[in-house]
Each structure stands twice: as structure tokens, then as C-alpha cells.
Amino acid sequence: MADGIAWILEPYLIDCVTFARDVEPVELASRLGARPGQQPHCASADDAVDLLAGNGVGSVARVGRAGDWSFAVEYGDAVGSTTTGLGAVSAKGVEAVSFLLTPWHPPSMFTYYRDGNHICSFGIGEEARRRGQNPDVLVPALTEVGVLPAQRDLREADAERVRRLSVLTIEEHFRLRLPRTDVLHGQLPLFVVRKA
Image 1: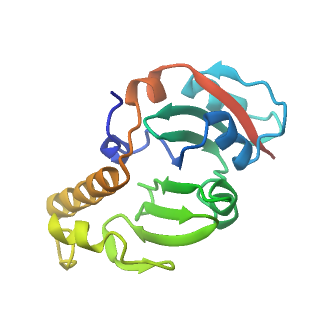
Image 2: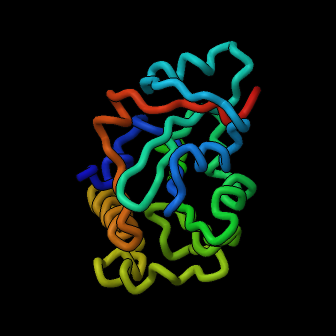
Image 3: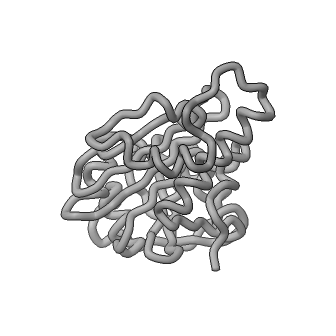
């Protein structure tokens, strides 16, 4: 069984991860912008970063599958964190979840799209400020674990606990998994999804 996803909150491990339910990893890469017929090669996280250095490549994605969800860990100018990118990933009835992780400029962002529509998004740690067509979709679960109603003036330790509870709630709600060892130290199929 793959790991959960709470580990993505550890600073500077990954910048963006996009999930798509019931879509194969190659199809997810295509929806992010990989050109048709592109032959992936297995690559490490370091290989992905190196490919961005002066090669006319703006964004690459390493892809895999965990449970019902395919995932794409993006490097460079992440496509999955954009409205256009998630709209394309979630087209034709697909569900898509994206995390844009910005420890240098909080908050990190959670976004959920379905069938090309923005359903819900919020900053991790700022769950009281939600957007989307159904911004309250996670409110019952977030309330049950104590993330909502939002508490002001949290100490940093409490704020970190709330962020972790929020991500764990999203993980449980969507049944998301992300294999930490594979993502950080393994070889995964790599696609170029955007030229520079």
C-alpha cells in the first residue's frame, strides 16, 4: 500500500502534485500537456530538475498510480496548479485534485476539479476562505476533526497541527495516496509537459 499524502507538507520536498481518478498515468501526462506519442523514460527527481536547466523545457512531470488515482509530480512551471491545467485534467467526468506547495510563501493550495469545473479550493491553514462551485464539500469532515471553525491567533505548533489535519482529512475524503520512496528516491516515467 502506498503512503498517505501528509508528508508533502514537509518543506521543499515537492512543489506540485496533481491527482486524477480513474485515468491512467500516461493519460494524466497527456492532459497536462505531454505531446502525443512522447516516449517517457524513467527518471529520478534529480533527473527531472536537471532536465529543466537550459534545455528549453518549462515543465516536466513524473507519473505513477496509487489506488484509483494516477499522480503527476510536477517540476518547473507546474501546469496542474493552474485553472486551465486542472480544467483539462478533469475534462469528461474526471476528478482532479492538486496541491501547490509553497513553504516559502504560504499558504500552500488545495484545489479540487470535477468534469472541468472548479468545485473547491482553499489555502492549507486557511480553510475558512474557500472558493468554487461547492466550496463547502469538505466542511463536515474539516469540522469533525477540528480544523473548522477557524481559530485565529494559533501558535505555530498549533497551526502546523491544523495544516496536517487538513491534509489528512483531504487524503481520507478522496482516498489519496502518494508513495514517498518512489517519488523522492525512485525512478518514475517522466514526460515533458511544457516547453520553455
